[in-house]
Length: 89
Image 1 (cartoon, rainbow, N blue to C red):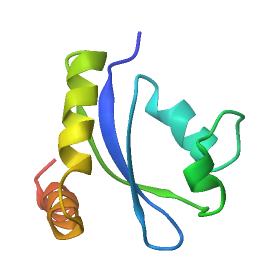
Image 2: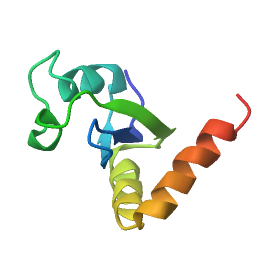
Image 3: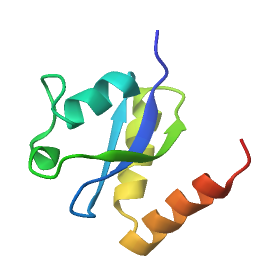
Image 4: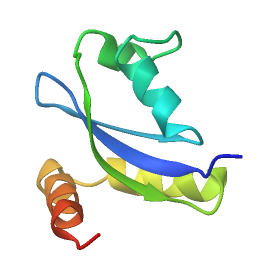
């Protein structure tokens, strides 16, 4: 069983896409057209790159967090991405 997560992609045109998934690897393949089922938004903006992800307790929590991230202005989304990339692993 896969864990639910919220993720942010950067599209080839520089736009950001936020979504949720319980199988991030499969979803990235879909976004990049390597597997059927990707969203219409990313079809014309490929390739996309994963820039941020965070785990969620369940689908509902992931969707609540997705909505919160989508409501952020772009500079705050970029700050979230940058803070994650600078965090120790």
